[in-house]
Amino acid sequence: MDRSRLVVVAVAAVIALSLLVIGVYAWITLGDTGMTASGYFAVALGALGTIGLGVGLMTLLFYSHRHGYDERAGESPLERERD
Image 1 (cartoon, rainbow, N blue to C red):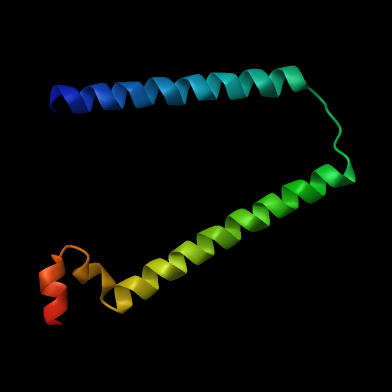
Image 2 (image 1 turned 180 degrees about the vertical axis):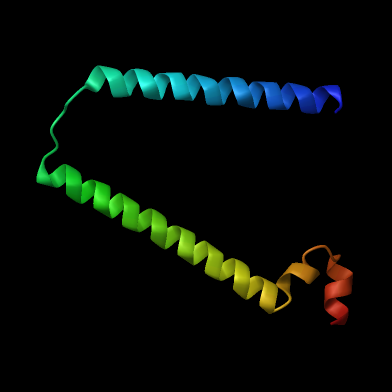
């Protein structure tokens, strides 16, 4: 593995570890916190929105692949005009 790739992996590992430590600290310090109905509603909307976004993006991915848009992505504009 070359040096630049090793640096990128090391930086990503440090960031991931830092986020994990912050998350564990927040989890411990918050303790037993109650959530209102509005909070549960917001969590449900966030989860549904995330699932909807994932389904939509995967649909676009499969549509693009099946209709040949992926093969044309690397072509130059002159090659596209010939088709």
